[in-house]
Amino acid sequence: MSRKISASLRKAAAQRAGYRCEYCRLPAGDSYYGFHVDHIISLKHGGDTALDNLACCCPDCNRNKGTDLGTFLDTESELVRFFNPRKDDWNHHFLMDESGMIHHKTSVGAATVKIFLFNHPDRIIERRLLWRLGLLP
Image (tube, rainbow, N blue to C red; front, side, top):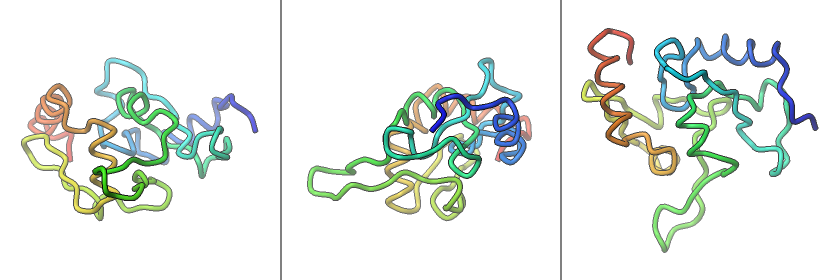
């Protein structure tokens, strides 16, 4: 399993995503920092460096996700996996409103919103501005 993601795989992942973060939908062109290509299932959990296991993502989503696969929503719950852009429909799990908030519709959405910090105040402000400029949803 290669740790290095080739330039051609990076380009293919970004093109497939429409140059947006596949987790929070932030447009890549509107980010000060360059976007990352994330291993959806990290190498340490058995994922590989193949296009079907890669996601274009913003630095915030990549940093907050880390190598995690899911989380516990409360002390009594079972492990809930994160949204997987290769297997899941974003609109099934999330709803973004014009205020910049991303609301979850499912437990998978709730786990992702929680750990990826989708609704951190700075991220909400950025999405609200992009919404007003017509660059979101």
